[in-house]
Length: 375
Picture 1 (spheres, rainbow, N blue to C red):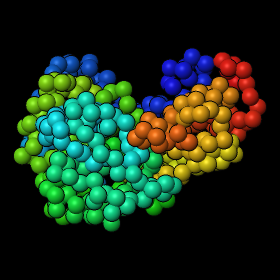
Picture 2 (picture 1 turned 180 degrees about the vertical axis):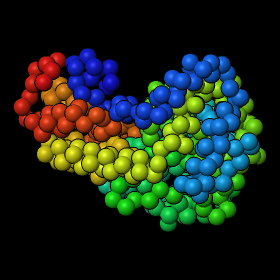
Picture 3 (picture 1 turned 90 degrees about the vertical axis):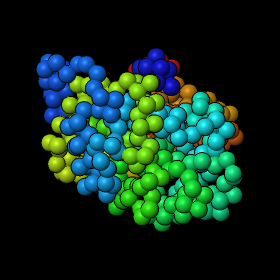
């Protein structure tokens, strides 16, 4: 859809590229690092100053205590950390619980390693967790649970009660829990982010993934990190080293500046800005007859596209792009086969003027344009 949107000069609300401007300190420090000669491999776990800054941030914000020398890896994006963790901790034939709607990369990485993802369907429109449904899919081959909170694509933020119920299940069946928390600062309406590893007794079995792509608007830098019990780090680091060698060296210095120089006001303003963008897009989707499921976190909206022409979600997404020049993702990308055909996902991590134009086009959806015309 990103390619198709570019072809017709549309506005891409499909891919989560986050094309807003990064903080100046992050950019300038990375440039200075390049000019200062920080252009060679780092240690496989990243530069010491970044690991120390991450450990400080984890302790203060996530309430996770991690040794920067033995419990942290700087990774090639949170996705790179996920791939390495799965390589290290899972075997072909293992089963992993995945809450649906899911982030497609999680499912496909598991499948690429011949691990079986087992979907646990969350109940729309608020994506509530059915505890009985979750228990029914546990088998002798279940090895781990994947949690994405706040979630792409639904914007669900798992509550403490839900996480505690998952913790009971993980302890009962001796499961790893892999948590992707990359959207941890994008929270709305009083929603609270709780890191699973901060729950009593969960630190040893939890692999925590996060990064800087979304928070600092540097998705192309591919900078993430992974925190885990020192027991698991050598194996995870080994597989990350085999695949990526290390995360980009000078860019790691930019991330240090972001962690150390930006105050809490930056993160508060970030959430405020994105809540305003969320509300703007929600209003436009309602006006277009695309009933949204209003997210509590992240920066995506799943919307009901039933009334759009097309037999499938892919056809509906293409028809929407042709009619008003706004790109979206078919809901089927986030569900197992047979689900999601009535849904489209929209990303609102856009610059204000571009998002405003996308919303204007959605509100004028009935004014069908000729395909390829830029408005």
